[in-house]
Length: 199
Image (cartoon, rainbow, N blue to C red):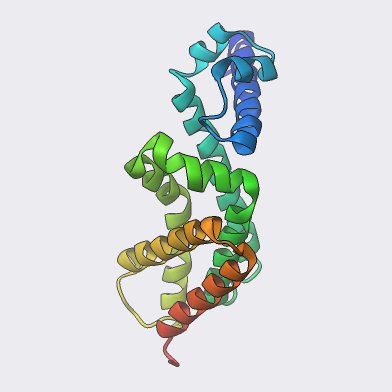
């Protein structure tokens, strides 16, 4: 279906709002940014904001979705290079996830604000939509080639995602985030070694 000029303007307005809000939320957090500031930064009217989004929380949800999608894309791209070894792909994906979550914008939006603004279940669902499928795919591949002891993939994927989410939250609050990330990466590697046939 061909988009009308109105559709294109509406999409452009939405992009402007999400881009402006992402920058502001990433820098100062959800609570520290008002809608007036967002519309000023986007160069649109308050009416345009409420035409595109129900409220500030709805705009934040769109921002969080964009950040999660970008993180998942980075992980998929990076892990694809190690696809010949699915366990190594899981290791690479875990490191890329923790690296992404350590970036100030992603840390603020995804780890610190999203659970409170979206609610725990919506935050978990958002992470699941992007990360869970990647982990399940890598695990299915690993089980298929005998690199991981055969077991139900779906619950294992939830366990690994849960561990990574907790690691990311731990790192975000650590006094020494670099050391915390190294420790969490080593622990995740031990978890993976625990489900491989040679251990």
